[in-house]
Image (cartoon, rainbow, N blue to C red; front, top):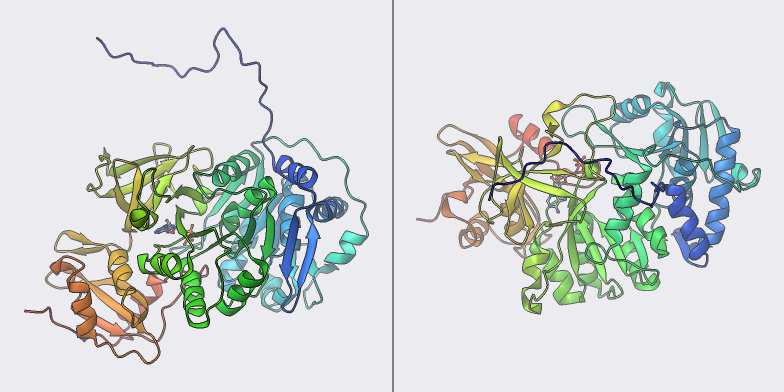
Length: 552
Ligand code: ADP
């Protein structure tokens, strides 16, 4: 039989849907939680006690904030930046700003000053909501923020030029709005900038619709899975890809929130988990690694956690095993990026997996969340999902960006698909295994070595605290791996022993012959291994490299 070819897209037929295009908006998420889950709680850690408020109380303050912003002249499409930790006030801005038709821009407080200046001016933020503890940081650059007209400061603090209002005064002096403007679902709701590992950070603008769909998809049981019985501890900052959407998905489900504010040290987090008993939490691997070491050493009870979401960088298997075997906590892996809102894939063991094999699946990067489409590419050729063919992952979908804000970047897009820059394989069940970032993969003699896999094995060694592997120039092979390790205090393993430890685990030609002990691993503004900095240090001759020959 001949194959059928549909040439035209099908939009209008002789029958029309009886369901209107009812807009999916952040106001919709907000009002649902406010009304249906009025008694759910938002608790913020204040260093020595918890500040607690019900959804109903937070809801009223959201309405007051929106009214105040309106009185201050903030209108549809205006950008309102936040420079804040994860706390109740930040959550209030998350709902007030988009619901009134303005655009929330969460600013990464850890960017370099010149990047901060760049993104605030590029986004043209008119007003910034700032945590008092962060005003000294902002004061240094405030003179160069050309579009900012005024600041609202949460807590006691000042020292900013231009008009500065106090958050609590602003809330107290406004009546709660009772009606919201009609906002189209495709209107801009929020924006985030990538952390800009090369060149300037790039802006991604989320719509109400993309945010709504991302919240619904990420709360599904097949992805993070949450209900009103949960208590969510978002450790991932609200300025890092909108805390992976947890503020919206959690509120949509009516879960309680436990906000860590600026108390992000492993000990504080572990103690917070033990006393407040959250069920879901999310953070990058470096944070979980620190928490695991702390709870291992101090016997803290973290068993309330039903689901730890870890992502933003490769998740070491040894860490997942540590959480599961020693604390009964399941660490699932999420994969995505600022450009994908960010959740694109989640690792959950497929049905029928025997308990003792779950870890094999949890350690994969994940399966795409329903809505996201994926293809594996090598140039123009689409590769098979056979678990072996290695290519670049491309995605598209209702919460995947198709461009950057006011910046042309054709090399990042491919016929409507986002080039993720992540290299990996996809197996027949649809599980992705990222093996490297395209720019980190080590090209040795025409073959690829996964720096991520070498790091994953190295960190499993009991004496290794952190490990990072970069490709360095080599006359014969073009590039070879340089393994840089930070040892645990009092550790005694030699580099030869580390090499031997790797020897049974990776192909012989992958074994690094260049090694270095380093004092600490440089981190990016969102806590990931910063290979760019390490490469630059290597190029300047600042890393004392030691040759360790392969075993005979
Ligand atoms: P930035 O690009 O600014 O560092 P993102 O948080 O958007 O910030 O980073 C996205 C990148 O993080 C992805 O392209 C990928 O390389 C990496 N990443 C995210 N999740 C995972 C994961 N589970 N495993 C490996 N890498 C990951």
